[in-house]
Image (cartoon, rainbow, N blue to C red; front, side, top):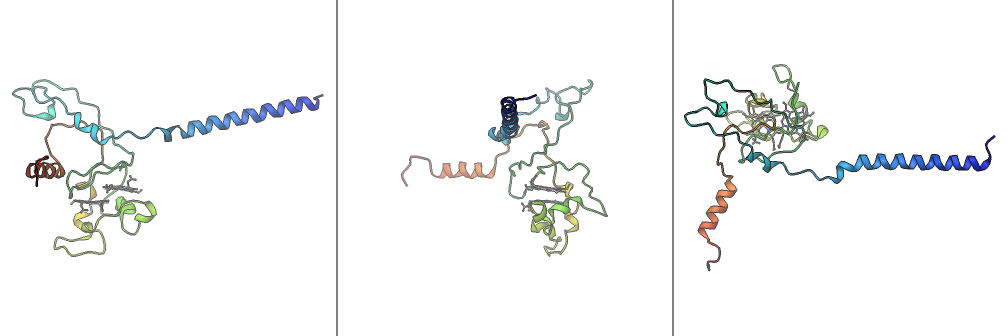
Length: 191
Ligand code: HEC
Ligand code: HEC
């Protein structure tokens, strides 16, 4: 038969074990929160595939001569992490920060508008399509999404980890304005 003392010990051990399990669970659950997400926008610019070799004009072949067979690169992965990328210019259609796999957009239904219509945006916490999407070509406002903005993927694309096919030296308008301002007012000059 168990004495009162043994019961006591067993209870104590059980409580200690439960506390340990709770602490491990808490620690594992909160680990992700402590690691701040790394900034990703800037990392992309660097991954440009090799420039076409001399005499090769097609960058999509990644410098491989036309008479040789290239090993296709792995398919790009769609980023599904809700992180918006910067728009390169004010009227750029923003890239889609989520996966759109199996989102049907055809004559009968538009899956995107389930979340992005003005009336549904609150429920899904999605940004509603802007007013331009309700305007016809004469700039008249329509009650429903404009037919010319119906097929969202004509203009909006998902974000992938694809490497750039060609390099470019695009400069953001803010950078151009800053350069122009610096030229007009060189630092250190009296005004
Ligand atoms: C289930 C709801 C849902 C559906 C369906 C959906 N979206 Fe989204 N979308 C969101 C949410 C929420 C956001 C805000 C960012 C995030 O959380 O991913 C967003 C963000 C966006 C953005 C970025 C807007 C900005 O200002 O940067 C675009 C563009 C977009 N979605 C386009 C689409 C397109 C095109 C489709 C259909 C192919 C679609 N979405 C379907 C919920 C949805
Ligand atoms: C003809 C090109 C085109 C089509 C088609 C189109 N968009 Fe856009 N979209 C744009 C452009 C350009 C912008 C940025 C400027 C603006 O708001 O008009 C934009 C902006 C957006 C934004 C951000 C709104 C904001 O206020 O920041 C969302 C969300 C969006 N579109 C979703 C959609 C969805 C969903 C569809 C399909 C129903 C769609 N778009 C169809 C070109 C398009």
